[in-house]
Amino acid sequence: MALLIRNGEIVTVGARVQADVYVENETITRIGRDLQAPPNAEIIDATGKLVFPGFIDPHVHIYLPFMATFAKDTHETGSIAALIGGTTTYIEMSCPNRNDDALEGYQLWKSKADGKSACDYAFHMSVTKFVKETESQLREIVADGTASFKIFLAYKNFFGVDDGEMYQTLELAKRIGVIVTAHCENAELVARLQQKLLAEGKTGPEWHETSRPESVEAEGTGRFATFLETTGATGYVVHLSCEKALHAALEARSRGVKIHVESVLPHLLLDKSYAERPGVEGMKHVMSPPLRAKQNQAVLWKALELGSIDTVGTDHCPFDTEQKLLGKNSFVNIPNGIPGIEDRVNLLYTHGVKRGRLDLDRLVDAASTRAAKLFGLFPRKGTIAVGSDADLVVYDTSYRGVVSAKSQHVNNDYNGFEGMEIEGRPSIVTVRGKVQVRDGKFIGERGHGKMLKREPAHF
Ligand code: URP
Ligand code: ZN
Ligand code: ZN
Image (tube, rainbow, N blue to C red; front, side, top):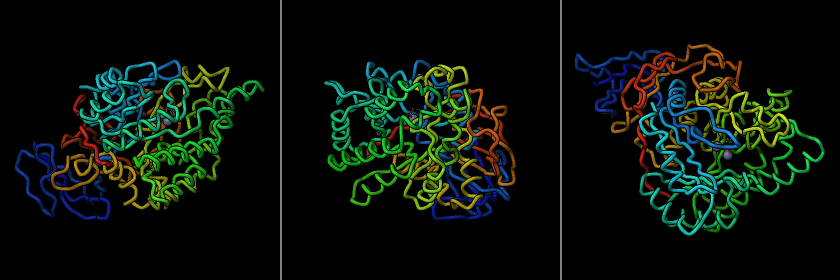
């Protein structure tokens, strides 16, 4: 059925226009004033509302065996939560560990999403070792449409790669035009600091940040940049959390290194005092890189406003209270991660746009368009244009609410952003022309989501 969204203010990077959007066969076919629709078309009145391109979260974990447990969401729950928050596409980290076969792992991750997701999705393929068969396996995975890799410089002996493996991954990525995303922390230093703190009897969540200080992240970021420079590959630092690491990335960029930067919602809005809360309340805010000293936030917001930080993701990775308590005797065993997929756009709009830290243009760019461009989805995704997929968010700026675990759709018993104000929310969310969300409720089709195939473009 055709869909006509009437009279909204369409916001794309570089343009704001009052117009109608007409959709046929999952695609935007017309944009203009006073468009006519056949009698059987679905009509949505967007008067007084903003119309955004569907938002893209470039960094989520849905299926994730990690730290002796599993992240809580499935593609059924995660995708519905994403859509309610205006995210119509997410890119999941496919994360087999060092002992797993990469290709089998990739197939497993795909099988978990297949037919289950209500939003569209793609994968970053984690390279967690580099052995004889790795190159041919990665080529096969890229040929299947997964044209981005992930490496972890942290998580020694589990996901982590050593410098030789990082070099081999980047060297291959350069040859085949694939962008490489990276978690940048020095694994050896983290391990040493953890041992030292535990030996001193410092076992609570408040020591997590001390075990992974800013310098450890800055070193990882700088080393990744040096390897990018040497190989000529294109890289993307995930969840960059602090000024020192930002400086390392931007200094490299200024000398011509092809390095992009993502920050995630927790580092923009929360600080390390959250992880210093007593007991399990602190554990709920343990993630890596850790929440930082508050003064980093202003630096990250400024860099985001200027576009020096390219994108905002979530690193959505929900573990519930019981799982967090796995680390009650040692912060080293607290499952790392926090949910965010449902709240990213509303919190960015409220605490970014409404608080004067971001303009609408950068909101759309950072939370949709730039990820689409970097990861081979543009212009199918990330914009509102004739020929693009009809992923649309009709945004109600008059809505007022508060983030709460009580009303969330993420499969978790807490929300790290509990109590934060929301000044706007999606009133309609479509995925390829199908209305999936209306006013905070999922009303669409489970399993409507498709895996998005992407071509290498970073030669
Ligand atoms: O704490 C985090 N970030 N958990 C998820 C795994 C990762 O490092 O992205
Ligand atoms: Zn990470
Ligand atoms: Zn992650």
